[in-house]
Amino acid sequence: MSGRKFNIPANIQSRITKVFVTNLPEKCSGNDLSYFIRSYGDIYDLYIARKRDKAGNRFGFVSFLDVKDNRDLVRQICNTRIGDCWLKANIARFTLEEGEIGPELDNSKRKPDSRENAARKEERPPTRAASSFFNGTRSYSDTLTGRQGPLKDVKTVIVDNQANAFRGLHGKALVARMIDLEALKSIYLILNDICPGLGRVQYLGGLSVLISFEDNIVTSLVLEAARGVIGRFSSVDYWEGQNFGYDHLAWLKVMGIPLHLITNEVIDVVGSIFGKVAHRAKRSNSDGDLSYDYIGVLVGDGKRIGEEVTLLWRDRKFNIWVSEESGEWVPEFYQVTTSVSDQPVLENFK
Image 1 (cartoon, rainbow, N blue to C red):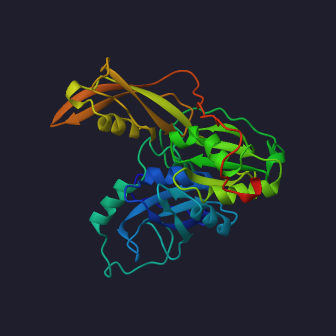
Image 2 (cartoon, rainbow, N blue to C red):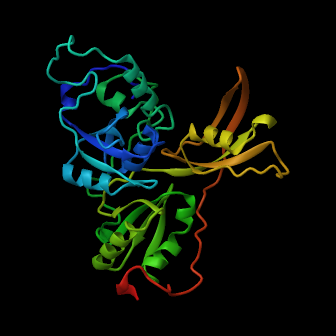
Image 3 (cartoon, helix red, strand yellow):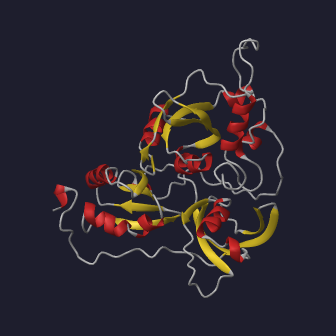
């Protein structure tokens, strides 16, 4: 994931399915894209191209390992929305990254564009913010190809192959990833607009919830309606036993920012190096204590954050400190004040 050249062994190359993904938002980074699609499979590599496609959209390539159903993978990605943009995807053809196996080319026909390689390096998910690629020890691609990373003893537990929790909810529940914290807290209000009085909500961590119903028909109707709701869901899919990955919302206390640099924008940038910002800083000039502020970020592992960070400003350096608040965070869902919605989205639930 570092952007440097490396040879991918043939046995790994044969397991890779590369997907072309386009219609990316203007400010969408590799971290953002990986966050929204990593639940659909094991991501081996990802990059966002510097150029645009024929329609003028930003695009990238995502390499997945051991994909069982290409059509289903493409369908899930196409049902994913980042901001106001629905992703478009198809299986990439004749697209090889540096180091991958392919026919030898005449190097005289095209010399590598160093600027393009540099741009690609910048777009690849870096360090901890790309939590879908790193587990805190070695990256997933490092593990598969034998490249060395920081090593650490990790205990292993062998799980019974027959383990299959929540099997009874297959086809009768939805896994919904909300677009932001406000949408997460509003899930009961959103459901009340779609299907008043129906749906059990269980928090899964991060911005995700499990919504279960009594039968498959209701689930199908709600899924269709939810995908038509604008600005609330980043993805909604049936629960069928698939892996959706793990996220937790970390509330970070940012301390020590110099007075002349204490802005919400600076605090947000600091938070973004640890994960995707889910709740932006809301500092006010009227605050009584200007020594710290909080920000909420999505992190893809269970490790607690506690680090020193250096701010660079006009050739000067300032050390600040970021620590995650202890204790488990549970979202405070907004409650429906009336028992029945005035105008349900689904006619069947009137």
